[in-house]
Length: 154
Image (tube, rainbow, N blue to C red; front, side, top):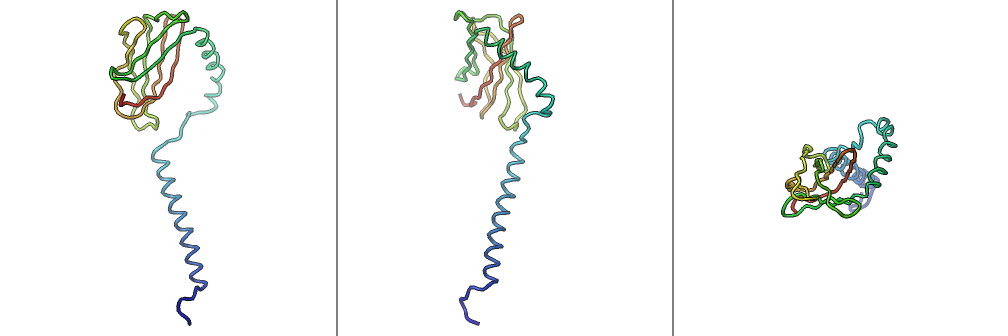
């Protein structure tokens, strides 16, 4: 037997080793994906689909209001500015902000909006990290919804 010769066993172990590496990497990635993101968009897609047209109607009604609502996160915390179709500040809005972590790592927080001045509202400061904030505003029978992503560092 000659030394340094590539045999069938060498080929077998080379191919088997390559597959073992691929399987190991796939297993690690699958475990990491399951632990970091539950991947649940809705609990029951059939029930959610039954409310789709209602959501469209609410969106059209919101658009007809003509409100301009902007949100920002700065040194003063999470701020919201609301104006009507004429550009006048919207006062006496009732509302709240729901703050959720994008991957569900932290429990959701719901905060009432406090009116600071005419058309200016605050929901306090955000914790460090990235957050999805859903604002729900109401005045009389009029409703407004805004969803925005923020970084808790300001």
